[in-house]
Structure formats: structure tokens, C-alpha cells
Length: 390
Image (tube, rainbow, N blue to C red):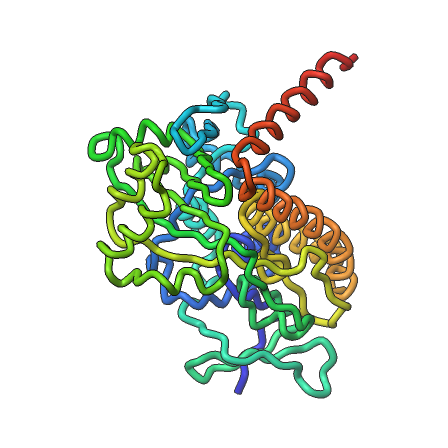
């Protein structure tokens, strides 16, 4: 026998958690069904810059602005662009204005989890099937690996890039973008890896040589996290045996011949094994026709490459706006979802287009020249706006 939940959110990432928080804050019950067995199941990792125009708006809608400011990483908005020799081409300090404050993803997730009732999240729920309930328009059944089934009047797919819920509304699947990442960490950087801490700087690092780049950031715990990105065929990462830590490190370092020792040292001195990851994205204009009782948010709706920095921001913004639409249309799920999706599609298409353009700009012949020129153009635009301001 199935248990019925009026609103079921599949996925307990930042988007699903934000949706649940905004709903609960407005007196609307919703339940999250999360694959992971517990909140401590894995390190969430990584720093996120939370944008004023979407991510911060979601946090305010959730009523969490004050506790959010307490987890902001001081200095995290700093940014530097280097060429492969280590020459600094652009450097920005953190002005402390919270325009794009950096926070630890795990701490932000904990903040959202702690803001929910204890029974709002069901852990260890691996979805095996989703299907419409025959004879009940708009109602769906979700089956889990342990044999449990539930039904719901609104099924929200917040289940990431390889969403199972997406199949109810769209045949689209993410495609390889042409970029692969190799990730690594350096712990206790100031004391154990001072040279690499210096080259990384206090916040975000971009270092490029044509189609290869090192992106990274200093995290709130003092560690360094880096991504070596390379434009390569989809099967390229399979040519390196990442189960052999020494051999894989040597293979990756061979790609960085001619780079400065400081930048190469991020790979050479990484603590633990290097981790490969292919970058996938849905079509920038991904959308779907309305399906009663189902919608998507975050990566399930619009997974894109990370080069516009919008993934987490959009997921939280989606979650907040969907929740607010449901609050504003009490008892009318279809009207709420229609209002949400009408704004979702152009918003996500714009961000996905920017992400794809940034990918091409960064991983291109002559990079990072075009990246430096882009920021210089932003400076000129801002100065012009200041001059003509009344």
C-alpha cells in the first residue's frame, strides 16, 4: 500500500532543500526523498559564489539571510587570472560587499537542512521508477529500491543531471560538452603547501594556456581545491589509469610541460588521488510541454557547464520561485507550475547560453587573453555607467 504525500521533492540538494524550506516557512508541507543514507554520507565540498540576483534572493525568501552571512568566507570574493607561466594578468580583492560571497557548499546545505522539520527529509530513498497513477490525473507514483512506493499530487524533480523524474516530461539527456576535469585537493595549504597557497590567492584562480586551464579556490577550511580542465574527446579520461595514483599524476603533469612550477605543484602535491569528471550539459533551450503534477528544478531542468557559476544559484532560485508560486496559488497546482515554468525556461536558457559562451571563451586558442579582455570590458562598462549616472 502506498503512502500519499501532497508534495514530494525527489533530491535533497540545494534546490530541493530551498523549495522545501520556503514551503515550510509559508505553512505548506513538503517531503524530500534523498538518495544518500544520511547528511554525513559524503563530503559535499567546494566553494560557491552566491549571486545577488538569484542565489541571495532565494536565501532571503527562505528567511535565512542572517545565518547565511555567518558562513560567508571572508576574502573569498578575491579573484586572479594568470597565464601558464604564473604571470598575474588580473587581480581583484574581496571588497566585502557581498555581491558574490563565497560559502562552503556543505555548510550551506547544513544551514538548509537544519531549517527544516526533522521529518521533512526521508534519507536513503533510491528511486527506481516513476509513473502516472492510472485514472487520477496529475497524480504520480514513485517506487524506491527497498520496495516502498508513494503517491503524490506534485512530483518535483530536484534529482540532478541524470534525473529520473525528467523522463516524465522530456526525452532530453545531458551531452558531453567537450571539457573534462581532473580534480584534486591540497590540505592545510598555508602550512603544508605555502607555495601553492600563494599562487592560488585568497579566492578564485583562473590560469590558462589555450585549451587547458587550472581553476581553483581556497576553501574556508584552509585547503585548496583545483580543477584541471582540458578540451578533449569524451573517452580521453579513460586513457589514464586513475587507480594508479603515481602513474596518473605523471600523466597529468606531462600535460603541463612549460607551466610554472607553482602551478604544476597543485597537481604534483595534491593530497589523495586525482579524480576525473566529464562535464555534461542539456541543450541551452531545454523546455517541455506541461505535464500535470510534475515539474523540475536545478540540474534536472537545466544542467549546464560550470563556467557561468550559475548552477547552485539557479537551483536555489528555482526552488524558491516554485515554492512561492505554490503559496500564491493555493489549491491550484497546475496554475502554480505554469507560472513557475513560464519564467523558468527563458531564465535557464539565458544562463545556459552564457555558460556555453564562457566555456568557448576560456578553453580557446590564446586563452586567457579573451578572459582578461572580457573583465576589462566590464570595467569600462561600469565606469561609463558611473559617469552618466544622475
